[in-house]
Image (cartoon, rainbow, N blue to C red; front, top):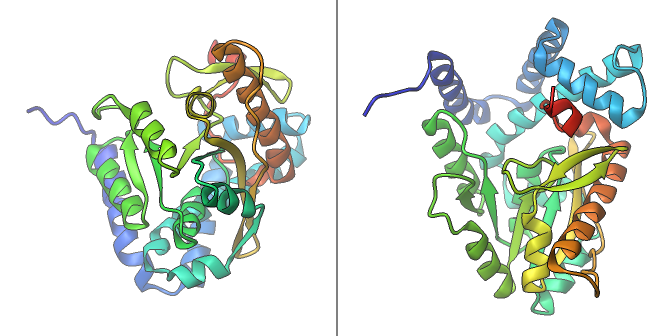
Length: 302
């Protein structure tokens, strides 16, 4: 079989492998400073990803993309993004007690009470803060869950990411290249009263649902709202952010499935409900929203 992995992909994979091996062996504060320094270097070069982040943040804040305020916010955003990578390298060496102690949660009862009542839960969240740490917290408080992961390149990096998340107690299904039955597997998990966690503000398929998000059209994944409609599971939006050296999670109240309308109309209504909650959470913590890609339809069409 021909190896199509590029040199750059191999370097990235090697870097992640070294990170998971070496970073936990070194003191936390000096390594955190190194990652912050790297974030500032990337930010100062103002490459494509940084410019895209600034464009996205400008839409979120209503400020001009070239303003000093957005520029400073993008630096904070890059520091938050690089902090995520520093933390995932350390997470496997953290105890469950430390993870729980350092995670400040609003609305945990929405999960605990729903599961205790025998209903499944679909947690939907945007790409904010450290979602892997949030997952580790969820496992630590007694709710192992199933998620779906984008298939990264090279394959070795994807396998390492899966192994990392499985090591934290998650069940990981590949977005592509699996058995093709992801939705059925997720539906089975929640019908049995389990928990599913899914990213929900950026559509990586061709079946997304169009919503209004910060005043412009985009598409979000259909999976989370469709699972709620099909299975009766509780759809709980969640936002994740940093709190000093610790982490915050806001688990919002259940979005109820509309009583009237077609399945498509119900899914659309729930998708817009998710977008509305995400808007509020991102507005409160814009520096922790890691959206370095095009998101809105008018940007994608260019």
